[in-house]
Image 1 (cartoon, rainbow, N blue to C red):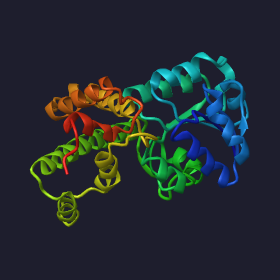
Image 2: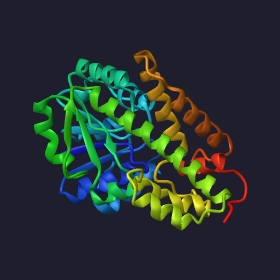
Image 3: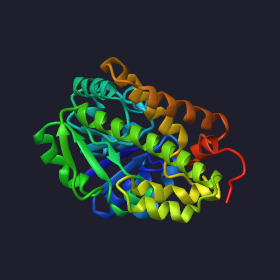
Image 4: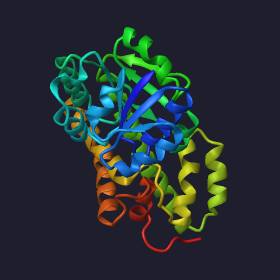
Length: 290
């Protein structure tokens, strides 16, 4: 299959490698070209413009930061006819309303559109174990499911465009809330003099346990948030998107608002580009107690 890929960042690069490993032809464009260049050694072609990449593909996969970046790269920087008879598969985290508007614009330019946000991080992307959620029609799902299986073994059709985007926001809101709550409990047992290993042993045996706790505890204990799987600034963006979409639904958002404030302070303290587990520095400030 001839695939164009736009957005070879933290998640985009391992996803591109999976597509290439599956034997597909891939042309990559990234606004910062240097981030795409390493994919040449894997067999990708690096395009100098989004239009060059799109012109080579049957489909265009987007893994960009937000809807503004998508609009700039996909709609402002290419000619009106560039998307004709091509399918756009949007994989980034954007709001349901944004995804629907993007779909309408792609359709208006003669293309086809579906969303396929993923749950998981760099290790899951590298192994092809992402959870792929598809918003589109059954026909679209059947057309592209084999390509999506490069990224995760069991892509799931959620419903029409906007529904997978909504589900992804619900899950990312949970990521923020779980991480904040875990950092708080960890800080509490440390300051109470409870052995952290015993805390984790009990937690792992309980219904309260989530695997993300073990993925983040070493970062929190060592206070090492470099080489992020997902930067704090991106999770804050997703929490804001969730709040904007949830507010008209008459949901009580006090928990989300609290988490949002904590991540905003995390960015203020210089951890915007750091792993989102750096929220621990706001919740449990000062020298970590043994």
